[in-house]
Length: 216
Image (cartoon, rainbow, N blue to C red; front, side):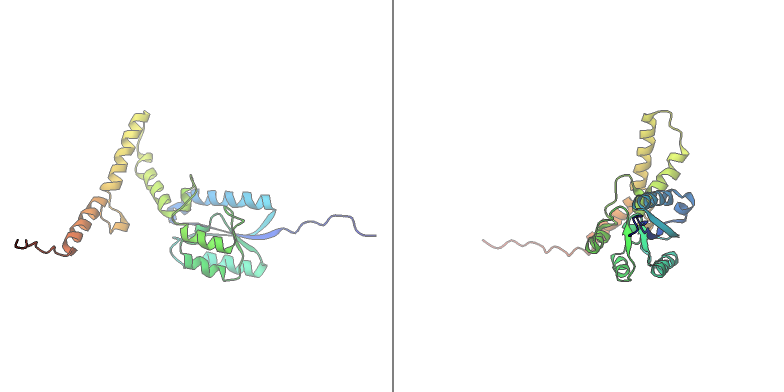
């Protein structure tokens, strides 16, 4: 007689990897909690089994990732899948993603679990441009801006009315977009950068030859 007892479904082994861009984000846990929540919900639905969790505090532009290397080694050893919340949590460098695809480790982003390798490669090229609404932690620059807005404005002010909140936030926005120094502008303000750019453009522009009228 055959055994009619149904066999227990083998659970997919998963190694989870989470990354935030700055030490402040790592301490606050806000970005990590959002990523972990998305991954755990997905794996619960898919009946996956987490055998390891790795957390990295590092910018997405750098390829030196000791925690990621440990996660990949565990995946190879246990024949597990590397699971991330979104593709850009691996890197913002398309060549880095391409190299990972050739490493032999299967990986899955829970926000697009059905995409094949080609579509993942395409997505990697645009990951730094497009983010999901309400998910600033998917983009390091947006996340950094939100942290600065909270620390320099929202946490320092009391807003007795909506009107006053609008006035204060609008003034902070004006300062940030015009007067505040930015590291990616060489610690110049946007206004200074624009002025210097216009001055440089005038200096480097070719001289316009003088127009001489032809005799009739």
